[in-house]
Image (cartoon, rainbow, N blue to C red; front, top):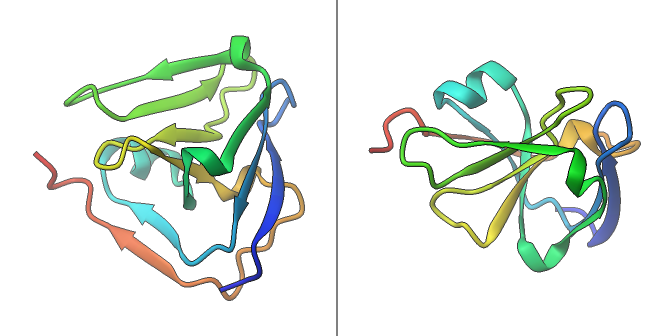
Length: 118
């Protein structure tokens, strides 16, 4: 685990900007149909530790299956910066590859099973 810090993030074009506060207890992957395709490495943060700084109007939302999880993408560049989680909707799954200067080396990665969720 790292020390708790504030990390800035953005989509590729910079229209969507956000910050999170976390100590990165772990990173996760998921094997559901959308996560496999976007191949993101995520960190889970409580909604109180997530702040959208700019670009709400630049976001588009995608839902599928149970229509509970809310996956957000930038309308301009198409990048997935974060999603609202299905099982824990008060948490945000953040794509760590959108964090500025972030190196995931040394943080444990847990594979989550999303494919079998009914």
